[in-house]
Length: 322
Image (cartoon, rainbow, N blue to C red; front, side, top):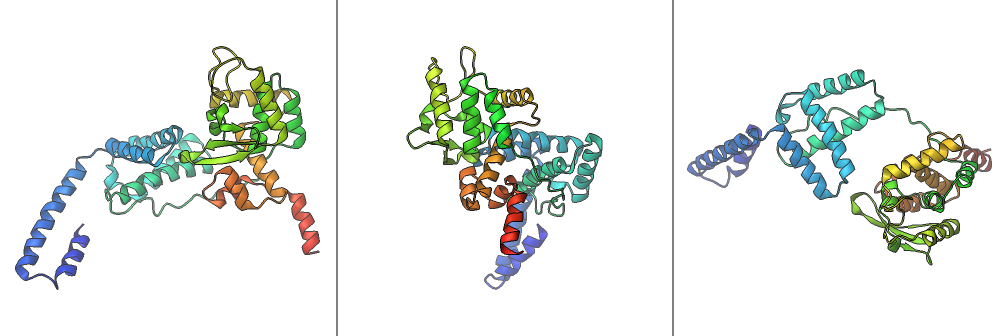
């Protein structure tokens, strides 16, 4: 604060007289002191709530807000220092201790670091702190493992073991569109255009986009909707009455169960999304278009979802290099 005050006075020195400068200094000191006093009255919990309110206005989902809350609350419970006085070493020590106590991996710790960094960056942007203590805590380096996708054979196995038209339609819609599970359960029948084979989904931050499905998904969706007798506007509902809108957990449990029936491990909605991205890139779709379909704001995110087929790499090498 003192540095800012000196800078302001130096800037105004050539425009004001000595008496005016003294008055300006007096007014600045009085108002800045009152502002500082007001800031010290705000508790850590209040700062957290203001941060969450700001993120909610920005369009973050309830799931994301809860993740922010849990992460930052744990930090505030572990470090008693007011957030405006927390330093880099305290937070670095906290992250190190968290990893040791919980035995979690580097990816988990880096996610926590990123959430805490968002909190302190917001405090800095709002002028509650002069500089974020997270600036010197950099991204934790992790192994970039090539994640598995669902093979064509596995998809056929899952289809063959579907006992109802709903599950079949759900699998093919996920497989051909690559939509998020949250987007899937929020879809309404009215959002689907069967003639154009497309549907409108609302992604993160309530961003609207169009996604497209293939002929197989269209037929299975129509068969499923024709078999329903309920009046629920949701595209996917529970099998039992009162046929409520299907929840994220319901989709996850159903896919996991189907996977176990055919001895496939780690079958979950996000794996369909990654598979779709990989297939699209392997077949020559420009990465920018894949980014558009997946609803990513950054193309780097799209690249993380896509596993380039090693066979294609070898073929390209033989074509262009060998």
